[in-house]
Amino acid sequence: MIDLRSDTVTRPSPAMLDAMMSAPLGDDVWGDDPTVNAFQEHLATLAGKQAALLFPSGTQSNLVGLMAHCERGDEYIVGQSAHTYRYEGGGAAVLGSIQPQPIENASDGSLPLEKISAAIKADDFHFARTRLLALENTIAGKVLPEDYVHQATEFARSRGLTTHLDGARLFNAAVASEVPLEQLCRPFDSVSLCFSKGMGTPIGSALVGTRSFIERARRWRKVVGGGMRQAGVIAAACQYALDHHVDDLALDHRRAARLAKGLAALPGIQVTSQATNMVFAHVPDEHLRPLSTWLKEHDILIELLYATRLVVHRDIDDADIDKVLDVMGAYFQQHAA
Ligand SMILES: *Cc1c(COP(=O)(O)O)cnc(C)c1O
Image (cartoon, rainbow, N blue to C red; front, side):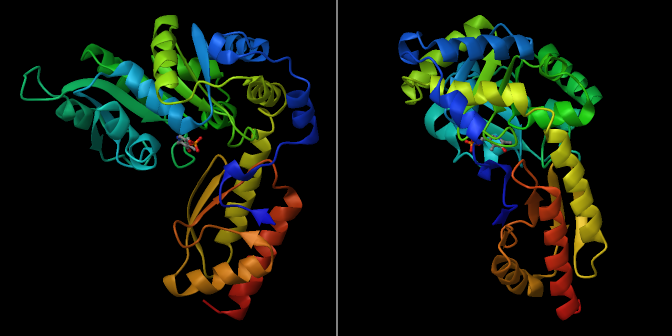
């Protein structure tokens, strides 16, 4: 199967599985899994923060990050299309008693400063306490403009807000913009990073921030059931990805660009954007179901019905891109658009 539904579908390589199998282990809730400890230290240094904490998922890492910033009755400012707001079951409100204040994302994924400013509530007991600004990078594959990030985080700080970055795909942003991870993390108090997307691990995310922030997060991670025991098997996979997979993300980006270019040349499909490893396209409604079926018959999986998004990842090679373009081309030849 050529699976373009998401970059979460990657399988661990034999070498990554070897690293997981041979990792020295302990009990991480007791703080004595050496592989987890080494990974967390390594990642904190790489991100330019004091400390890091391993999580089973990015959803939990974001949730715990928000809970470590905000208390009951606080609110966080976030984009309407942000993963933390839209795709995490409303966890901040459900489990954190944190009120989201969503505002519309601009087309580049940013949240306009004047909208952030207007959303910040006065210090008055009628209102929730506006506490935090949360951004996302990459967002819909796009790298947030670095100037914007500096302006937004400085503005937030000037208004007494802390800042969190959902950096599920921050490694893609770092590779695409050739900016070190540390520099992309620097403007934020905390950052959540995922290893189970383009980085190719079967599981694993991490939160980075100051030592005191990470200690608060460690408490909330336990509360939400994220304290794990011999978690070195996960940390070993994440460390392996850091050591061997980061540079490969450039291949995904190049292949996504080639896929977008090839699709744009087909008559029935309109490419609306391509950035880093993602391609978004518009397919006329009448073609959605038959095209989806056609692709499946040719062992290609694409999430056409929910959002025409094609995601390139390390289990997709050049031949796969050629095949997708051929099969798509054949469909539109038979069904003149
Ligand atoms: C995938 C993702 C997450 C976390 O997802 P999990 O599946 O819980 O690991 C968070 N934010 C963004 C932007 C994501 O794409």
